[in-house]
Length: 398
Ligand code: 3PG
Ligand code: MG
Image (cartoon, rainbow, N blue to C red; front, top):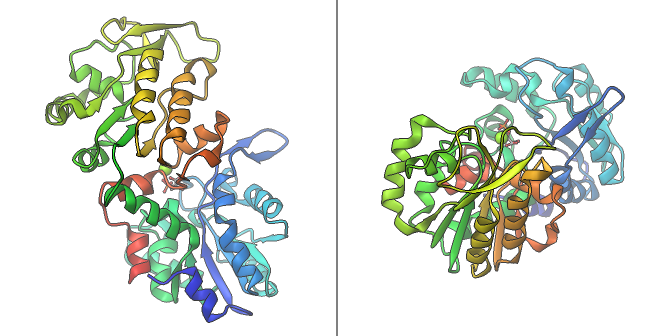
């Protein structure tokens, strides 16, 4: 795989470089304004953008945001992201109001060496995500006009077989950006030769989303701690009543089998925080997992579980954490995730899987610098750890 360093060594002065970034960041919409509520993904790609701009490239950045349906939709405009991007970069970012149309043509044509442009949301074009190779290919040809070289630094999207990720690199000399290189290096240590004890913590809503990664990691880890909404299906598989908690009834048999095979490696909560409803002012109780009442919703791991998880994590040399332990966005259900985040931060080599867990770290005020690595890819890091081939990585390797 050729990398950004190889491209910089070739020299990019005066050359147009198309950069695929993952600027899919959370936004808050109010009547007056739209603001970026977590700019972690923008900051993560800045070194690549700066390196190219300082080397005199005409830098054309493209990204998706959310899941619009293949046509322009103002809710998913990258315009507010361009504004934050420019602030963080400390330089103007010229924004094109379309992706491959008149505005993009004009903005990219007027870009001077060392300047940066951002195209409007890739997914405003049906070709970006199309399952039809020809339709994707056609869109890729239009996009590829904006670069003489292509850099993929969108780690969060490498698991997508999309035009900007999979087809454009077939058309242009292609290079992995610094973020993609760092993410892959880090994740490979989790699957090849992790220092022991190696502990994985998983949370999030659905156990069905995590079965692939659980099955692939179980033989490699010393312990797998499970909290979050997904633990209730596993608790139900153990025969506990889970009341009104999240439950994937169709996964109970699979979970029974999983627990039988995993033995003591899988560690489940012994207590949970329950409430009658999910709200910021909910009245909460802590109950043992054998005492969840019919009307109880389990919304966080309990304090005894948090202590037990933290104990396992304290002695770990390698930790991977993906998925919150509870509904941390609501103060009454944030303690479990906060305790786990702090314990993960204290482990030897600590990796936070992207998405919600990365957002939780920042929202709960845990120092980002205390982790060895915070991934920018949620789905991408999980699919990597499942052992799947990532289309974007395969395209860079070809
Ligand atoms: C993410 O947020 O996980 C990435 O940006 C990929 O987005 P997607 O799941 O909509 O493809
Ligand atoms: Mg996602």
